[in-house]
Image (cartoon, rainbow, N blue to C red):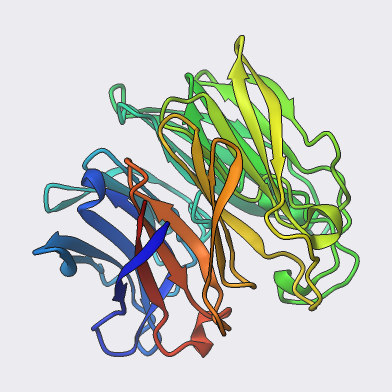
Length: 379
């Protein structure tokens, strides 16, 4: 079912693969986030299929894009959209790459390093008229000497050049910064995943905390910013990270939502179908039946789905595994033996679901010499 065709490693000195990538142009173009460990330069590398293999053909690396955590990236039609922030001027750039040209579509002022912080915190409508991107905000309440956290979705209309905001209220709870972590656009709706990262064990590494939140959810908005509905898992367990990643099929009828710590850290994916203008839970998929026996709190993470929702793929970084489903049945498991570098940290398929790009990297990436993107054919 999966046949490896190429391994991509950066050919720029001191440069490591970051944690996100995506295809466009029917899979003939691949964009990969990268970072220079010495200069702290961030960059987007563009690879084009030439004579059957992908070769680097373009690079976006303005001097002002350094030491950022923006990894949001989406490929659609012939375009790649991503986020880059000028931290000196405090300006966030939503950038499009199309036909060998990089162009800023719109900017966000008074911007910290938290615009488009996660790989799927940007979404594009099929006609590319609407762009949704998540912006996490931290405000200092000087009177009470506290920090206030909030999250907002900026929905930009490329025709009118106007933006609509969907926001959470300010909160002193740190987990608020993970609201709207993953986004999708379908059926004239913005779909936003918000895992509840309430934790009991204080550590600086979010992957090693003990989580017990019960508020994980999916929020659905219309294009005017009105809240339409909330989606939760029927059997949600505390700290399940429901909504950490989500993906919608090309026809807009199937939604896959990841809950990587559900059922005592076994992890699962929930499937929803769009029926009578509502999202209805239609399935639950747990490709492995053993829990994580390490201090890592989640692992089953990435997801992709094809045009009509009949096929989807899940990835498990800790176990180095890819799981392929066809008509709701697990039909293939690919395991990279001996993987210690989070093989499957991010996965992206092309529009026809015939190839997948798989990120492998350490966490944190400073410990990794290069990182890599593994390319597979799907049959």
